[in-house]
Image 1 (cartoon, helix red, strand yellow):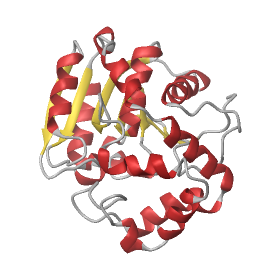
Image 2 (cartoon, helix red, strand yellow; image 1 turned 90 degrees about the vertical axis):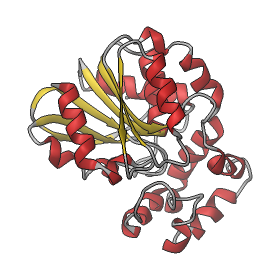
Image 3 (cartoon, rainbow, N blue to C red; image 1 turned 180 degrees about the vertical axis):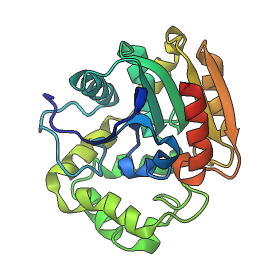
Length: 269
């Protein structure tokens, strides 16, 4: 693709393709506990270039939210995928909303789990990261401090994103590319600077144009993406169903992987 290389894993199987979209500072391993429960399906799990990617994009790549939505659409086209079920979480949910309102041609179904929406992009707890991204040298210092697991477990890092503590080896891996590779860090800084609620607010005015089946799966215990956002999204999409998950926060794929997979399987059948 003109933007650069996007790495992905493919699990061959039956049915229309299911493509997963994670958020900032994680990679496709966010979905690893979900995948075994979808065995036999055609699954595509990219490591989107959202700060934990190992290969930086082209220096001139558009990494604003609309640019990232274009990148997802371009990836679907490059893989010649149609009737895609797009499954998204966190920042990936905001990107998916832009995909279905700007580039819906290859998307046949949408699954949104806890994610940015409306005026909540980014959640208030994480907005200081956008300020830091505008201060020369500050992102490098923050990432250096994240080498220690207790720091990564703070509320403004990964501390409140899942109901139980996330494997510190995994969170360390997620932050390593931006910490050690200046080009990956450049991509992350561009993304943080580009995030604005104006994109999700604008997308919200067009959600009604996506009339294909939509499933909203929301963890009730999330302090960042509260239940009212799920209710608003379910009301905006004309063909939507809302499912609640107890004992789940923002990272639903980590907290309730089996139940999430069951809902995706039933929805895509």
